[in-house]
Length: 312
Image (cartoon, rainbow, N blue to C red; front, side, top):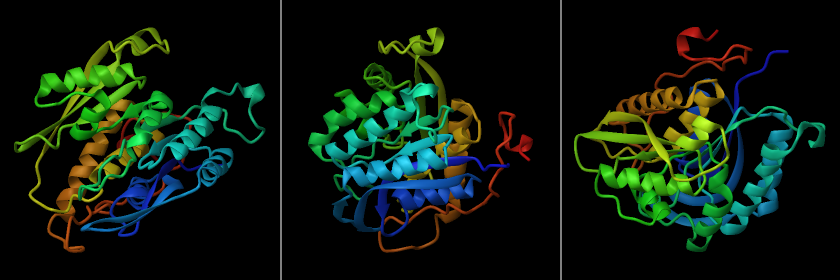
């Protein structure tokens, strides 16, 4: 029986459709991946701001995740906006069951394959609204962050996680070391908040984990890649962080390695911004064009996928 490449997004709902779960599903679908979802919160927002956040009960969030994991078996999972500590704890505990259970102790319907976990630590919206409660940050760092294959903070988010200001590239490296020490295997610090025409994103990995294959996080890091991108003159930037992280998730689900997935996701986002830069949606920060080059749903094969040219 044939199967599609599949991914799961755990995130908040954006009523105007430019960010959150809506952006994730659009991105995954546009990149040929079957998208499933677990809604962690419901936001009242449009392109001008966020006007309200309704929590989804933690057991409902966990139930959504379990329903997908036990049936759809996604190759990659993306976590976006998680608003409160109870929900973060519930998500972490649910995912741990699938990350740590031995095959003979798993539920009969539970997946036996591994999956990549990408976490986009959404803390503040494009319009400046606080999206993560302050008392939830500690739980996020202690329980959820160590599960991540990749963390994708922007500069302000990296400053919060590392507990230090970032004003230059050397500060980025120091912040990355601090974040890696918290437990994740890779961190992509996005430099879009720096001034200048060319924007740089920096990928760091836990050197000891990668070289010795040990679940130890000492803060010993290696700068793996630098991704360059030009600044596009547009206010249509709503949901760019969500779009990038869900694009990375999509490419990882399709079998790309980490560096290839990030490079391909960066190219997709750049093209999406360029395609939508002159289109007006709403009165504030409009969305990108997720469907500038939509792809068919790809069929899962036994061969690892390394580029679009090899896919069937």
